[in-house]
Image (cartoon, rainbow, N blue to C red; front, side, top):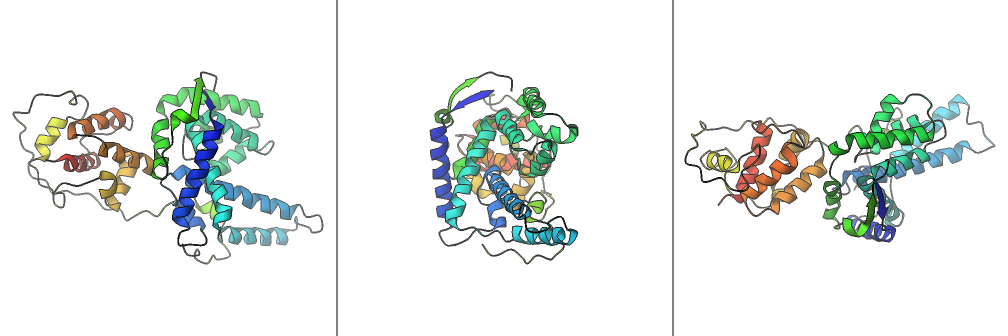
Length: 366
């Protein structure tokens, strides 16, 4: 799919997004560090595209050093010392607002492009790769691709031989056509930007046409690699896993259910859930809760992200906000059936799904 975009809207939105983010972060701070960038916004793709741009600038700095004609950078001792220096330098990311805001704006623009037109975005990545090293470039940058990465990731494993650029681009377009139905919704991805500033997709896409298509980091020892090597290993700190063991009373017999409504269709039945949850007692699960997006405990967010939303915290966040906007329990279950149960292969009777549904019930409990 080739997307005709409003580049003026994209530029203006990206700049305003960056300004809001920096207003929030730099209100009491002078610098931002690498670890803070990874968790800067609720959109993981924006955060990692900022890191990707810093990685590119880091490589450019290394290239400048290596191009100096007066010293022998091929000497093994010089190479080892330079590598160690650059790795230590990468773990001392410290950026003031004036230099950081353009990086955020650039990352937002890139994230929107990969969300709305992944074929064109990844084809441009092929253009950015050094000649004859396309596969190495993709492998090195894979850790930064968080949205629609399946469009290009297959090449890293399959194409270990020297195709030209046009062959790679054709492969990307063909793969997109084959897997497009399994990709995350553009609306779901774009919605993750809304915590900072709502994005008007209609204003951005003018036309579509079918085509082939806080404090300094911990001191670093000499044997550590670069910061950029570590970002994919632990992008965000994971809370301790807690095994979910609700204490249930014997499951009641469901009888005399109210007549089925327009929201009762799907693998999960709202009336059956309402009848069961209304008489079951869960330790620590009593009482009505407010906004789901604000009420989840850390361990619940971790479990739901991992078990129900394919490890995508952005997708969980959007789901919670969408449920919060529903007017009734039945409407919320209808949304869950339509958007998540089949698409994410949920097994309705598993404990993570049941705990998630319990929270939804508590939000709408009378």
